[in-house]
Image (cartoon, rainbow, N blue to C red; front, side):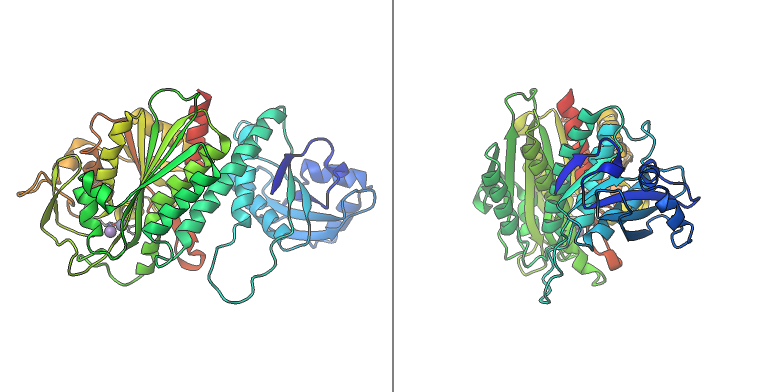
Length: 495
Ligand code: BES
Ligand code: MN
Ligand code: ZN
């Protein structure tokens, strides 16, 4: 997709299709008024028939009226005249959905946008490009029926742009990269576990390294993982026939400040629970348990794509969590790479086990910031539902930075506590700590477990169990939190 900003009178745009907004009060978007003026009131005369109510998300494709360069007009219902970011997003999703069903190759979008104080030119353009990518995303399904033809849409002009065309262009570039990163994440996460194995994830990371020479990728094999003494990671993988992979991706710009940002992803390509076997209901969704890994790989592609003046390291611990005669058993005690011993009371609390060793590995980079991403707990889904990612951190200012990035990206996160009391609940009679602490505050005790391995680091943990994929009819990866991470990284790059 080629993105550009729409400047000047939209009625004069040289494009296949002009997209204009109509509100449910009958009020027209500024773009619609311009079109109406240009064609002598033909639009308002047509609207008087009453076929189009301007309901949010409603669309109608019309042949263009006289004196327009375009061949079609797409009317889009924008609902209330006060345009919130949420309503605007829905209208833009409807726009792209409707265009994708036509043979329109180029379109100029002139919907009413939210007030600039809520969404400046940069964020408006970035969001628009991200939303477009997401709406055009088609799951890489394995259905044998012939696929419907790909959408014809190739170029999109987005407006209206306020005072800062430069900022808007930059926004489009960043949103385009974020959109592609999110699609990469979704493709990885949507694949079933018999296709998306740890080996496959490692191959995809290597492939990214070939595409971006500035991105150095290496993969630690089981013997290397053993040499790193990652006893917790090895305990999780030992029941699986698939070899584990520890993926290291490093992007370093010569302009980067000192101390990299390290992103750590949970890459459980399938979580059966192990010997603490899960209930069968919705167990298929545990193929998404590598969404943290997929978001690290997606975020690394965004950084490399935008050539940000940063030093970013992506670490992915990838393996399966399976029951077998060789699987780790409840009560087994293992030694983490950090040297702390862990009593594995529940083999289904495996994410924290692979992450604690990956977080320890991060220390060698003397990082300025470490952020892990994981579908870590069902408890986080109980606490926050599906709208906010949970953020836990040993540094309130880092948590605030992440929450703010989520607000700007419209990929929201909520700060949850990570204080010592939760860590005390992990007490074990036999080892330095247990890997679980009962049901209460499950998202927080999971974070508290990780906190024991991140002392002295500036660290945050994002629990994306409720936000990175959807269940039910819309089952699939959402591409979150690529938007949040992109904002965080480009904001850091500006410093
Ligand atoms: N991958 C799951 C967490 C999860 C659950 C993600 C539901 C998405 C939806 C994780 O490995 C897990 O099983 N966590 C346990 C921890 C418990 C045993 C302390 C959980 O949340 O039940
Ligand atoms: Mn589990
Ligand atoms: Zn898991």
